[in-house]
Image (tube, rainbow, N blue to C red; front, side, top):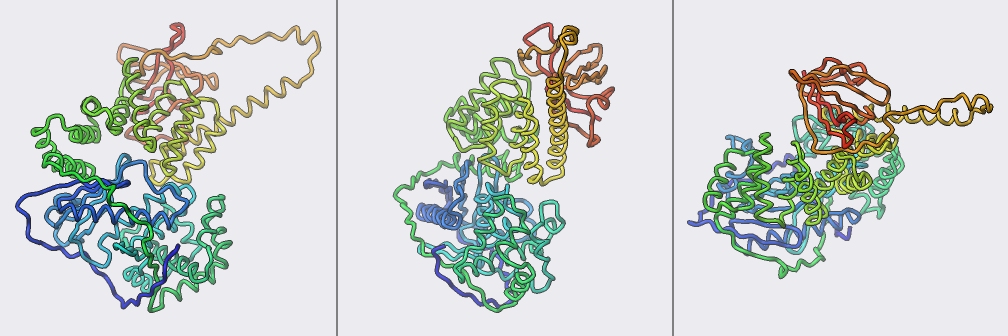
Length: 621
């Protein structure tokens, strides 16, 4: 790691919270923006302080580049740092949960969203590690691409290790011991390491309400012990463990190979926790930060309010965000940032058409804003689209990708867009795979790839993709969605294999000349390729006349006085979902759809003699 070695004695208990200060307030609020190569700092302090914050974050990035040399440490979404000079202004932005009397005083927080990352920090914060939460979440951001193979204990242990960092102008302290974690460990029985290594998001150990739970504390302690021991012994056991995990070796076996006998490791860890002094790393910051490349500009009060309103919107303080936005648009009706934030609020409340109009206006006002293009297209895709709308949506998604080639959501939406229209499916698969490569932990991106593979009859490959997705699923909703689609894909793959085997056997059976003459050439009425025409449409009603001729499916939707006949060439490709109730896990389309209320998405065929084709069925209670 290129670090010197330091030692620190701890006298427990040690719990220091950030102290609230109330310095004298300037009469006017002067906001400035400092742009460094990898961060945007917005502060109501002064230029010197703004430059110092940008410099510190660039140094932090350099430190993590040394710590994670093989990782892509720059996310596709921008990182915006709000440096707030005092408690009163910080309180106007922090989560409402921390405003109650007696609540913990925050020194900073990290707010992650699909399209941007916010850091909120108090410049007058005190305490041993006032920005611990910032460094903790920044570690998670940098390791997010390793979520596919990294077990939870290592993910959280690394974040806990690096959160106790102190970044100064000429040196950096990494991995300073956590008095709170050590106190917790000394007062509670450790988890067996074989248990610790297999804890996942579904485990009760991970969901204990107390943040100082045994899982977090022990994960920190083990990472700290191995990192320090590797440095002392000039070994790389942690690196070897990571290599084994990337080769799909299970966490317990990988630990045994890399760390040795787990009982001996457990005993060594228990002794380590009881010792009175702990070492940590001190790095001299050899990477120079060229602050001459920083761009500084003053922000008008309206521009500053627009930024604060956006943060409040993402921070769930909707009413405060709305008040600021109304003020901004009254002063500057063409403010692009305010238009986008209003669009985001409308979208979150389910007002899709209002959101779409606001993002369309933002695209019109600033065609170089990739987020405006992305949100306009993504929201447009939730409704019915005509041919002209299709062209605009596709153009906006491609523009968003061109403006920010590292922004995964735009690739995913383009893959979904092409997949739903059953065209350019090779490109759709490539777009989906690119989204996964940029954000491997995102379950939705893998589902998109699986749906595209099913659309191209690659059921076995879809099963493989969904198998990885199942390992990453965290919430009950994610687990259910992945499991249902995986079951569907497995049935389809089995049907494909059985059909291929039957065809092989038929082709190998010897036939006499007389028998061959008697064989009738079958006529398949649906062998012609389906060509969609027009926009996607929706009909709500009762499913009737459900008939299967595997894998074909025919049904009708009775909606008032109207009955619409629909067809699917392959019912394995239909996207099923449910609203307000829990369907059976083994839903069988051929037998379980009759007389069910549903919302059906379909598209007309270019061949007017062919029935409209089913895209998705949303079952209702």
